[in-house]
Image (tube, rainbow, N blue to C red; front, side, top):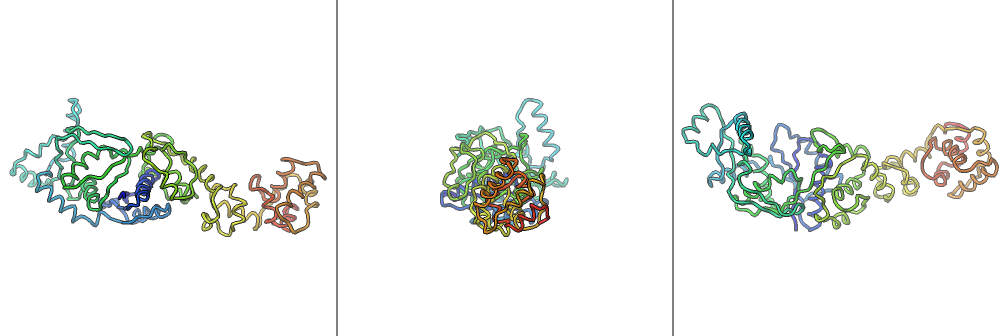
Length: 440
């Protein structure tokens, strides 16, 4: 049973790239009968807001990504401090006093000499007196984790065997000058405490993994398994960003994208399986495999979601959209679903049939002849064929010359669902009035 987690920072709105990570973690937990944890990484007090936190929960609830446990890092500072003290006592965490400017100068010098920009551990050589002097100047220490000299390897669930050589990564800062733990320290402690067994995240975190493995082992824990997926790119090839906007889940919801449309996309994009409409979360879960996940970065194009959303709606049962189509009933939904791109379009067609419209009369003489041949009620799905057959016999009009003027007069539109189905819903009185050019 896998215990997975999705750990967004509530500093902005989730985009489709973030939600892809959430979906895969949720799928892996549900596939194995495990647990899925939503963890808000809210240690950035300046940028984290309750509004963004609520937005994250709303987006996930909308998609059906239910969580078994909700955690907030801002409520766990005591744990982070306790483990910081333990690491200090073990000699694994040491204080450093360089300013950002001094560190930047050091990196530039190393680059100029053709050396990797790795921290030189100068702080390890400071005497007590030197540390006291620096603190007397007003400098407050940040704390670095001393990495080992061993090669670190792990078997990535998507990328395969990964090897990190020692000496190519700086000792990471785990506690900032203000005493706030960095992502690395808080995340590793959380994963240990919460029993996380599988971490699925974007490939931009691969470089962090060796550090996190060493830190987990230093804390006496066994590291989780890791799987790093490629990142979604925009249609132009740029990375998606919640700061730049674009692809926000909340915007997609407001634009009429169905939750199962987006889940169908998230579960299949970047895999060898075709991106197609899926209607069952259980089938979506059982059909997912890391073996099908490509290492190439897929492109996210909003236009693809529009097309997928229409395809999903064209096959959607009434129960799946009932709450979003107003007065539309099951019979009418089946009549119009093949002509909608958003669920709300069905309500538009309901209004065309039941409310007032302005008819479009393009051939008044022809429409008048057609109106004179309207059959008496009752009407059913055969009425349209009976009526248009009589109109063709009387006028000689057929094909587009027959259907288009009638459609425009009856619906005010040039395209739409089959008129054989719409005509009985419109009814004879309203149809006759519209054929007469009346607003009805």
